[in-house]
Image 1: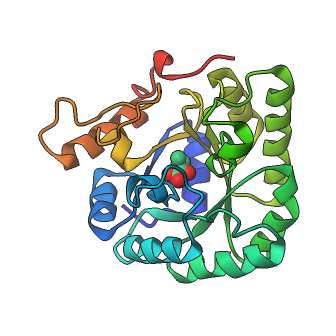
Image 2 (image 1 turned 120 degrees about the vertical axis):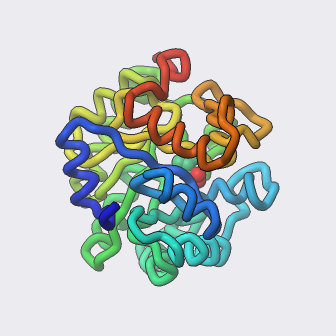
Image 3 (image 1 turned 60 degrees about the vertical axis):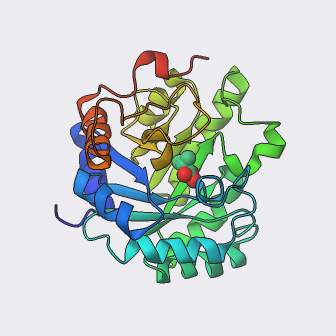
Amino acid sequence: MAKVTISTLDKIKASGDKFVCITAYDATFARLIEEAGAETMLVGDSLGMVLQGHESTIPVTIRDMEYHTRCVARVANSALVMADMPFMSYGNTEEALRNASLLMQAGAQMVKLEGGVWLSDTIQALVERGIPVCAHLGLTPQSVNVFGGYRVQGRTPKQAKSILADAVEIQDAGASILLLECVPAPLATDITAKVDIPVIGIGAGPGTDAQVLVLHDLLGLSTHQPRFVENFMTGQTSIQGALKAFVDAVKSGAYPREEQSYTA
Ligand code: KIV
């Protein structure tokens, strides 16, 4: 596969095809994920839970993210590597620029931040200085204590309107990708149609341009089982087989199914 860039993903959105993202934290899995045909990999701060054993992403540091981004980026040939900006590493624009630079210098091609309108100026500053941004909306796990748990967002008309407004605003600020987590499927479909940038969904139904899952979840290794998680090891005899099954299911539209989505 040729090197995937933002324009590759824009073209996939325009064609109506789907692309795939899987979280990666080390070189071995990054290689397998790329071999399975995923166009993008996310060095997610979910590593706080699946690698470090924390209960949330909040303890993850920029040093942790730098280290795992280096491990993944060292072997990524074709896939576009995104890296999460961890909790409080983008509290203001100056901090965001400094910390995003560390992730880009570790090999990321894009950074991901959680938030909407309040991040507009920061997104604009990052993009102006050559740092592409993916903005994460809906259930933003770094705000779990504000939400009072990992809850579906955008279920009331007021919340849905606010998430749509955030999506438009962050696109206007220059974000290249939007990631929607745990929002009702009709809202995600509506946002995907209304913005020009590619939208990646997780627990957001089948209407987004792409799907992402946490590696350990799709391999059936996690103890929690939210509705949208499918164990792709089922019926497979190898990790490679499970990764390929996930990629194929997203591209064919077989994943996610309706019962794996949320309603308003
Ligand atoms: O950190 C992560 O793995 C993520 C995904 C849940 C999208 O942000």
